[in-house]
Figure (cartoon, rainbow, N blue to C red):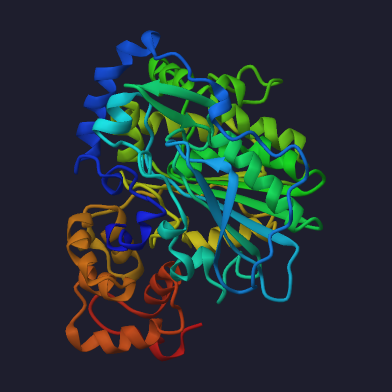
Length: 464
């Protein structure tokens, strides 16, 4: 949601706007792709690969960082598109833990001189990403990094920046207008995972999560992270990186990106279908990782991703429906919402009566009832009596414009109150009801439980 973008410059949840690109990515990204797809066969020659940092040959040294706080760790083996080193953020769990959350941030994508340097369709390409760009303990405001509750509260946590423009999955150094551009996201993943494995050698579970470009990165590098943690269960959560198939994902676009980023060299060699059908990576990994689970979170007509693929929302929807129908494995679940929003983990979304935190908690608890939820049909807002339905409609449905106008207020409680039009006299009661739930999703859930659109609910003083 755009009210969170000040801190999410690093997370780049909206991909295009925060990367300095045009204000309307749905229009301008489509124009950019149309202008470049015909040049796919004339892609610049690779630069000499020795310019990129090779992976460490020996087992890397463990990270030494204080528990319960975020620290930036320089990683000489990880490079940004400009060839300069980058690093990772780590927050070791106080008291130790046997589970690790790895979060890959997003920030667009680029594949030629125009998209990388003229239109700046990807974040941190020219300037790189260093410790000065790291948000540090500010990450704790997001529920999935919070130590106060949720499925990852007691995990070791790692933050992986994105500055290679290749959805974390490339292995190619290209020349764009005389600039060496290091699309080496897969190499960075290898170096990151090896360092974390050396730091915590006795893990029982790793949860690989990403949003937007990071969502695609989590899916496309899942097999690489599994290789770094042999014998460890590695779950994968892809937020806003729906791997829709062809023809919904135009083959020319897929080839353009694959060639620019060198994906043929980073995908699993024993999955020839994966390069042309990214969704095939889900059953491929699940077949080799007994007990692991995979999750996809997406809006049915994600406007940002559709724009990069130069397709309509309706086409994107058909692709999502095909992916969900094709992956018939009880260890795979999709969290699906109506609309064209992009990135769901940081917003108050509900599908199948569940918030995102509740759904992912069930996934990590191996709840046998966990699985695909949504998307539910939303009636006109005026026909909704319950506050929960009204607030969901405000976020996802016909009242979305009204909700957007409220986001400037900055807080989940205040924004939802504004969107649903509750009388001012009820605001104090609503805020008090939601106070024990500081997370975005939990605050919204408290509102849903304790209020109605026209008056404070009878249970407001006794929230669970």
